[in-house]
Image (cartoon, rainbow, N blue to C red; front, side, top):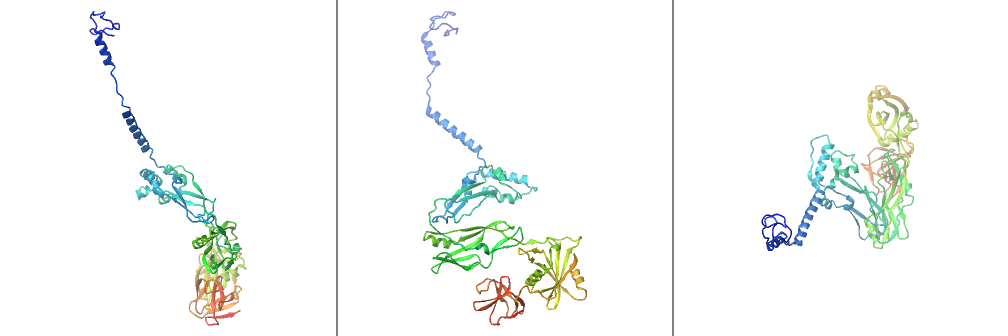
Amino acid sequence: MKCQYCGKEIPDNAKFCGYCGKQQDLTVKTTIAEKKTPAVSIDLKKIVTVLCVLAVIVLGVVLFLNRRVRIDPNKFLTVEMEEGRLNGDGAARFNIDYGYMTEKIDTDELADRALELIERSSDSPFHIYDRNRLADPSYYISWTTADRTDGLKNGDEIKVSFFPGQFWYDYGMEDAEWDDVQKLLEIKMAEDTTYKVSGLEEGEIIEFVVPDIADHVVCQGIEGSGCVEFDDKLPSEVNIDNTYYMKSTYTGYYDVIQNNQYLGSYRFYFSDNSGSLSEGDTYHVIGMPDQTLKDNLAKEKKVPAVYDQELKAGRFARYINSLSEITESDLDDLASLFYYYTNSNITAVYKATLKPTEVASGNQNFCLLVVFERGGYEYAARVHDLVRGGDGSLMSDDIDGGYYLSGDQPQAEQVASFYPQYNIEFFKNYDAPVMDGSIGTVVSLVEKLRIREKPSTSAREVGYAEKNKTYLVYSTTEAEGYTWLEIGDGMYIASKEGEWTTFKKN
């Protein structure tokens, strides 16, 4: 302890100071000691409250600092199965809740990032943009289902794929890939997700299948860009079982009848991959019931099945790449083709090759120049973009020209003067019109005699036969009280006891 007067250190409980000799008051010493260690009152409730407030503040700061653009479209993908559907006829409806997505992200930051990308990616410093749209996540993400979403059964899997949205196209970034989207939006997700169908109630499956449908598919167009379509010979009526049958309305469509009662329709069509075909490519023929048929059969707990058949494309037309590929026998096809399009007979054909000083567009560096007769006069025309049909025949629907030949100078010189860009060479003369297997000719005696796709008054109209014009006839059919004259592929006119037409056999 210390002396109460001089402050020197002295032994504890000493009555006198050994330095100054003064007596120590031990009562004062105790009071001082007590004052040195005062009692402290601690309020734990207040401390806990303060700590909680601090924790909330820290968490808010962390959330604010980390409130970046975070989008996982898979989490916002909604799938709804239509109610009342049976197994085999299920229908799934997919959607992305972009509104909910917008609530969960920092849309201002999204717009800022997009603006930075626009500035970096474009050569022009001037941009017209809508900031509200730039803050909309649906502007950057699109989605599609790779599989059919109707006619589903339990266990079917539907893949949903995401891909860059309209933003990338609007600002000249058409080559954007999914990685670019993820980088801009600061997301990390799988490129697609799969939904598995379950919970559909069982029902009886009714098969609506037209037999041998593959025999009624024809290939059209050019190799590499060909397509397929049904011919006009699909069965008009098909028995399904003792209860149902289908009656054809027009190509690819059937009405389903039960006890003379219409239940709905069934349609055959081609899958989305049935265009831009080459020989050997696969595609699908799909048979799909309409909603009326589904609803009517569902009352009996029956399900109209979806028909799906994979087929391979046959031979398509191919462009002819050189005049050396054209033989003299091809010229008969040319004459028939020309008559089909112009109702005129060819009298002569010239080969034409583009001069080296000229520039051609497309496949017009060579062509055939034809001289044809109409009304006792001769004219010249050009047939170009020649193709070899799937059946090997010469084809083209690119015919232009129609220059009058006066007869004042040699035919070859006049033809050459009409087409100075070509070097021409004589190919063939026709001594008589090529009739292309026709059985006769017919002249229409009325204005605008209807031409129909089939020999039936209910068939689709495809044009009109001109009054006093002569047409080749390839076949005759008796139907519905008329004589139907085939004047071309899928072209029929009706004759009634000579009132409307004059038919003359060869």
